[in-house]
Every structure is written in structure tokens, then in C-alpha cells.
Image (cartoon, one colour):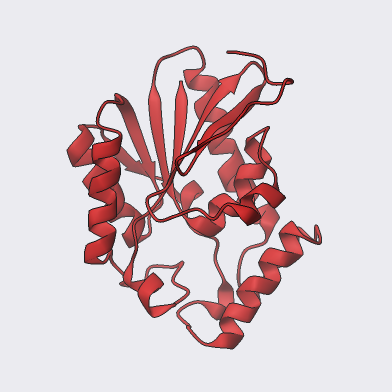
Length: 212
């Protein structure tokens, strides 16, 4: 089996620099729809068994485009929602983005995993919903030829993927931004989930990650 962690296409929130991780009306832009269609074309040869999507509008719309193009059903899961930014939600001012940068740095650079923007989620809150989904999918589909798409968000994946990918850490993520409609491909290697490709860049597996 393989998991494809996919970020949504560009949205109006990205263009407007709005923190929009609740149910605000920020759909995909025309470019975002084009990015989703291009991803569908790039993965047309991959038989996708199912798509799991964040409930946020930009992710749902990306999932709908992929689902229609690839002929794969999709379902919504809260596990893939972007992390809640509390009092910074719906804002585009510098103070709000300073709070966003502070909490990401507190988690990934300083290891303060219970930090949160007031009214928002902590790293541990996100871990409690994201990691069990990945573990369940790997366990349920281990040994199969299924390909699954997990449609989510840049902040979510930046924080969480180092927890589930044996050959990716926070420093790697920090130097390899997750592009819109970028795909991160992973597959189980015995007791580990290994990243094979990161937004088009093939990764060399560590010697500690034997062939499947």
C-alpha cells in the first residue's frame, strides 16, 4: 500500500493571507483548481482506492476534483483538518501571523508541545486526531496494493509528518515547503512508514529502512 499526503490547491485564503482553519468561505482560486487538475493528471496511472479529506472547503473542493478525475470515492474526516488558531482565526494582520509563527516554532524548534494560540489547538491535540488515522489505515491496508490519498493542509502536515515518517524530521520539513497540490508519497517498510517522494523530490531511504 501507499499513502499520498496531498495539500489542497491554492485558495482565496492563501491569496488574501487569511488564517482560515474553521468553516470560513474561502474556496479554491482558479489556479487552485488548475493545480488540482494537474495533480489528477500526474497520478492518473495510480489506481486510488479511496480519498480522505479535511472538512475545510479548499480541501473538499480539491478532493472533489481528484475524486471525479480518478474515479475514487472520498470521505471527510476531522483528523485532516488544519490546526485551529483560536483568536487568530479569520485574521490577516501581522499580529495574527506572529502568533502562528510563534506556535509553530514553539512546537517544532523548542519542543513545547502543549503550547497553543489562545482558543486554538496544541500540537498534542492535533497528534491525538491525526496519528491514529494514519496508524489505522496502515494497519488495515498493510500488505495490500491499495493507494490512499490523505487530503490536508500545509501546517498540519509540517507538524505531523515527522511523527509518522521514519526518514523525515522537522529540519527536513522546514527546508522543504509543501507546495499547493504537492504530494508526499509513503509506504510501510516493516515497522516503519517511509517517505519515498516529497513534492516531486525522490528520497534516498536510510539503511535502517529495509525493502518492504
